[in-house]
Length: 161
Image (cartoon, rainbow, N blue to C red; front, side, top):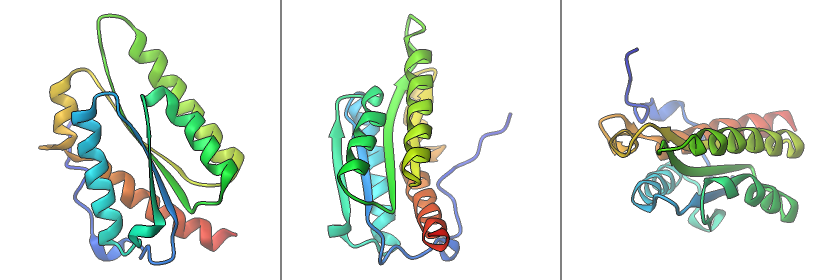
């Protein structure tokens, strides 16, 4: 199956974020990877006019904590979108499968429960090289993709409510 650089998008097709409040939850496990995701995400949001003071970055220990942090965040205030960034790399045990499934299901449930886009910006790779390729390498940067997705979904949410 062919891969593509997920960071390539048509900039003029992305909604302006001038009036959006966006939260970014950053898992610090695998920090060299997730820090690159975070940097690209925030740069993309500001490039598309989300005011810096309207971007709230929260740090959690790992990807498993992303669903509960997003739920706490949405219980405490309203956001146009929540972006969750993390990285789960396959190890010697099936631990990564359980974590990835729990995170995906948890973020989906929070998004549904709060009628707010919760963006899955979590890398689930077989090895560190694949993660690096998707955190600014030859496969682009999933942080950029997550930011663009959040802007599209926040604009859709505004139209719907």
